[in-house]
Length: 273
Length: 318
Image 1 (cartoon, rainbow over the protein chains, first blue to last red):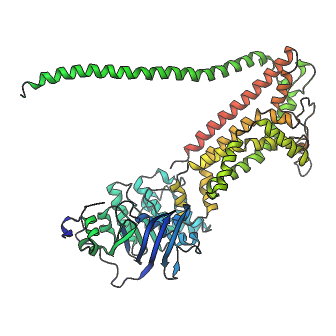
Image 2 (image 1 turned 180 degrees about the vertical axis):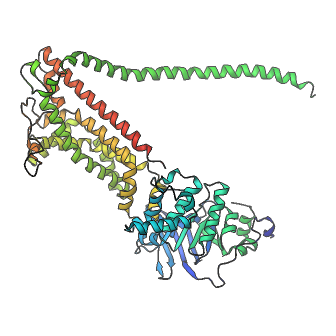
Image 3 (image 1 turned 90 degrees about the vertical axis):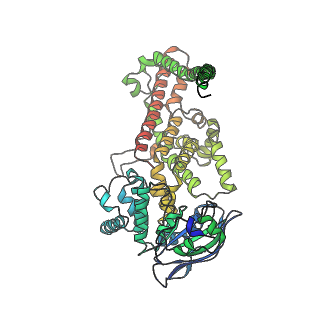
C-alpha cells in the first residue's frame, strides 16, 4: 500500500490546533434510523474544540446524516429515530435525547447548508433573524452584532452600503457568506457546514475555505465535504465514513498520508467513491 | 483508398439528407394537426363566453343607468333597480371574507406545517378536497338546518355569509396549501437552523412568502361566492326587498353596528333569477343588466387576482 503517491494530499496538512485538544462533543454509540433504514451504525468519535473536523466518504455513506444529528435537523422529518448519545460539553448534555428541545440545541449549534439559502429578505434581516427569534429587539445591539457577523464572514466591506437590498440579489459566493454570517450572528458553539461549496465556483470556494480556517480559532467547525482536497486543506481532523459506519478517524495529515484501513486508502486513492 | 472515399460519402449524405428531411416533415405534420385541434378546443370556450356576454350586453346595456343602481326592485320594470341586491351582495361578501379567509388560511397552514403525517390527517385532507366537489345546494341545506334553525340566526345576512364562507373554504385551503408547498424546503431549514420555533417559521417565512398564492385563492373563492345562488335560495334569501339593512356605521358611539347581520337580504344573482323567471321582456332586460354587473364584477376580481399575484411574486425570489 503506497497511498502517499496517489493522494492529492496537501504538501503541508494543517497542524492540529493544540497539542492536547479539548473535547467539545462526544458521539457515543450513535445509531440513526430513517423509518426502518439504519443510516448510521454505532458511531463513536470525539469532536475537538476550536478545530475543524471533516467528514468524508462516498455518496450515501451517512456523513450528512451524521452532521444533521448535531442540530437535530432530522426532527423535521417524520419517522426518524436517534439512538445513543451526542454529548455536548461543557455542560455534558445529550443533544439527541428526546428530552432535550431541538430548539435549544439549534440555538447553540448553527448550520450552513449545501446550497446558499438566504431568506427573500434584506441582507440585514437575513443576518439578524437568528437574533430576532431570540427576542432581541434593541436596534443598537442588532446593528452591532449584524456588523460583527458580516465582518466575521468577510462580507461587510462588500455589503455595508446596501444592507437593505435583498440577500437573494447577491452572487452565489456572497449568498453563502451571508448564510455563514447568519450562522455566526448567534454566537454558536459549533458551526456545521454541509458541503458548503458544492454549488460554488473555484474562487468563491477558496474564499469560503479561507473563512472556515480563520473562524476555527473561535468556534468548533464540523464540515461535510465530498471533496478530499478540501478536507485536506481546511480540516485538523478527518473522519472517513462508509455505508453508515465510521471507518477511520484521526488527525487529517495522518489519515491522508498513513491511513490505517484498507478501505480508507482505497477511497483516498480513488479506487471507489 | 483515401482518394476514393469522398465521392461515396457525398452521395450517401445527399441521399441521407433527403430521407432525413422527409422524415422530419412527416413527423412535423402531427405538430400542425394538434396545434389546430388545440386552438379549436380553446376557442370553443372563449367564443361561447364572449357570445354570451355580448348577448347580455345587447339585451341589458340600455338599463345600465345610475338609477338602476340606486333603485329598489319594483313592479314596473323600467323603474326597478338593484340597490338592495348589490348592497346585500357586498354585506354578505363581507361576512364571507371575514369568516372564511382566516378559517381557511389557518386550516391550510395547519395541514401543511403542523399536522402530523398520519391517517387522521390523510382523512381530513381527502375530506377537504371532496368538500370542493359538494354541490352548492347541499351547502344550502346544511346551512338551513345549522345556521337558520339550530343556531337560530334566521334568514339573515349572517346565515348567508357563513354558508358561503363554508363553501369557499376548500378553494382557499387548497390555494393556501399549494402556495405553502411552493416554498423551498431549504428556506424552512434555514429558519429552523437558527433556532426558530414552528410558529416563528410560519409567521416570519411561510405566511409572508405564501401571501401571493393565498390572496389569489381568496379572490377566486370570493368571485365564486358572488355568483352563487342555490344555497342562498335554500336558506331563504328574499327576492323582493325594498329596504336596506341597517348601516354598519353609525353617527353615535361606538360608531359601528352589527344589526345588519340579522337583516333579511337579497343578492345580485337572486335578483337576476327573479327577473328572469318573470314574464315580459322588460324584466328580462333588467335581468341581463344585472347579469352584466355580476360578470364584470367577477372578471374584475379575477383580473385583480392575476395582477396581485404578479406584483407580489416579483418581490420574492429564492
